[in-house]
Length: 418
Image (cartoon, rainbow, N blue to C red; front, side):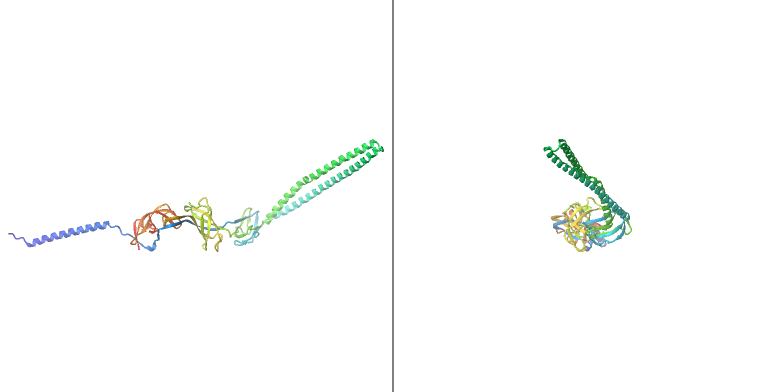
């Protein structure tokens, strides 16, 4: 029997035990590494107070578009200069209340003054010539009437003489020759009387024709005279309508040509709103749609009355005719905000309009879950309004979503709200 040293056996067991510990530790480290590698990255934390969260709803939704603009009068009148002149005096300033006869400013035109005096002299001279010519023609007509009356008288005397001679001839008191002479004289005077009557008729008919050229000249000069009189009167520029004087774009001493705008008058009681709406939101606009105008001192209702056919600087002009009484302080050129109602939709799923996402598009939104986290979901959007948008798929009524700009967390599929 051989004795085995006891110390060598202990060392061997110790080495085996150490090897087992080392293998176990390595195995544990490998398992931990694998487990950690399979864990999802930690979700970033976002302050809940810094984001806008809204709840998905179901029910009626009103589609609207919004634009800003100004109030403008529906009844505006520019007053032009009817003749050339120089501004002598500005009687009224913008803001003044005017009537149709209110004088706004006065012009002067020395050439027009001289023209009026010349027209007056020519008109009066033509009138005098007409009266003189008329007197001459009437005198000639009277002479013709006197000649006709004289021949008529002679004819009637000859007719009486013929009647007497015929009676004497029947009694054989005069010869047949005397009777023939009496008949011839009466016939001659009758013919002369008929001729004089015809002359008188022709003279009476020709009286107006002979006066026509002079009368036409008088009327021509009268028209010119009255035209220049009106032009001289129009040197006092009047409002022509009741309202408020808005603009006087000329200065004292300024020369103005015919057609130059001298003043603008508007009726402040009939106003409309001129809105500018982004062209991307005007697809469904139409005449007659309901609108509300915020004057910042009250809201007045109206209807769309006109839509510009073309866009300008990315916006489309829309006129809204106002209905009902205007709020206090409503005046021309007042800045306003307007909202136009496009349509009313019943029983749709909708939510507040997100920071990014146009209608009829698909976007990613963070939907809140239990435990204070939010996960990204794909949401299909439908028709949109000013503050709301229709949800076609991806969300259900009651879901809460983040509508703020979350582009800083595009690389994350989930976030934590605290």
